[in-house]
Length: 205
Length: 296
Image (cartoon, rainbow over all chains, first blue to last red):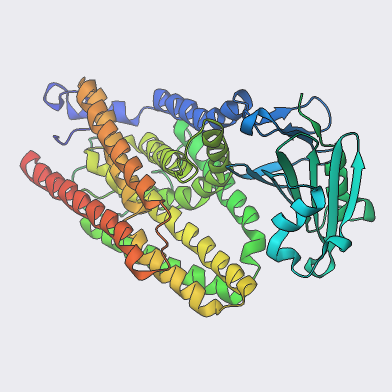
């Protein structure tokens, strides 16, 4: 490609003075192109995310987010209670990792095959992290066709594990909460958070 | 004023202030570029503040190593630059890459990853970096061409400006990776010195053929497109630009595959990508030098 000043066309047809004058003029058109492209680079991903709803995610008008697994058409809807804003920082397969901005609390939520009971599912899925914990240590609760189980492991800085599964559903929801929420209080401890998350789970409709 | 001739210098033109190649009140692009550069530097510093404060020794070592790397790469760039340009344009490119590119990609990359996941893209394929980072670097080149249009004489000008943007990005990115390696090493209970050293050395060596040349080759395509539009040869410009952007997008995509850079043999694929980009760059520079000699 021949050496030529920008926008000068065939340099042989223009005097160098004219070319120089043109190049010294403000480049408003290029600035406009720049602005449009910059806005597109910033806006298109955000707009895309706003328009494209994950098949497993339903944003509820109140109470934050919920999602349900589609595996075999069965599962649960999971609802994060209000007051927390969770950003999806990892999104793959049937596992979702949430954390709230400016806070150190971390929620790891995933769907697994349901066991006979929530407690059994919990011990199976928490596996090595709950090494030494036995069924007896797990707090179980049954209500409205749902079976839930929770356990807190004290030596992992209060990490809490919870499982909820619904009668007749082959899928269980496993939640692991750890870290510290903003304005840390007992009500916002990982254990309390996991409890509230499990309480917010309800059968898919 | 006539278009500048090939001076092969990065000096400020005689009779002008050092900042005028970038800061000109009558130039609309200056009003966009300068504030964005300032905001980018502040945003990057604030966002990485906690990490930078994690360990002053690690931070100092990472910054020093990357300043050295950037100095070496800019010296090489200066030596191979066949046309020359005011140093302020190159410096603005470096700061654009290390500032606004880092700040915006940190925000936008997760958005693209999430969108890709929603659309069913395989999680092993990372689309965000090839798209967002390359577009942001390209926008830096566009802005630099906008403020210094008289310094756009040949597509190789876009190559040099792009390389400067890429060098800024890779240096800051390597600093953040080095600090993160220290944090991870401490959490895992392994040697921090070894982890940081390995990260910085491997990334510095491989980065010679990564961000700098990615942005350089896309910058070449962009400059070719702008020049071609000015000459009424839009089709040719679009083809050159598309080839550059898609080729680099593919290279970046391959680079981001999880090769496991901590293991020696796994360094081969990214090293091959880097070698290929160096070869392409050498061809572009040689061709430009030949055209400049024959074109006067």
